[in-house]
Amino acid sequence: MGRKASHFETIPLCPEHHRHGPDAYHVSPKGFTEKYGTQRELLQKVQDELNITGCKCGCTSAFNESFSGL
Image (cartoon, rainbow, N blue to C red):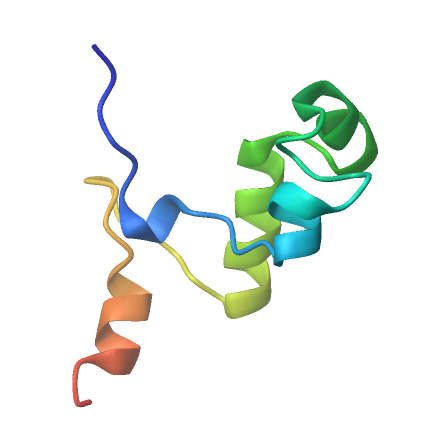
């Protein structure tokens, strides 16, 4: 059985791209992937945009340090 993804491994999608639009992931996962890339590729783009880096254990230490004082 697979493990549930960490909250740091989720891709933020608007409702239009998640479920409701003609290009939505849940309308056609294959079509969505062909147009926008794989989930792994999109996750990497989001992490790059947010400048998130992880350590060998898979945590996102840079992200955690940025928000530790909140």
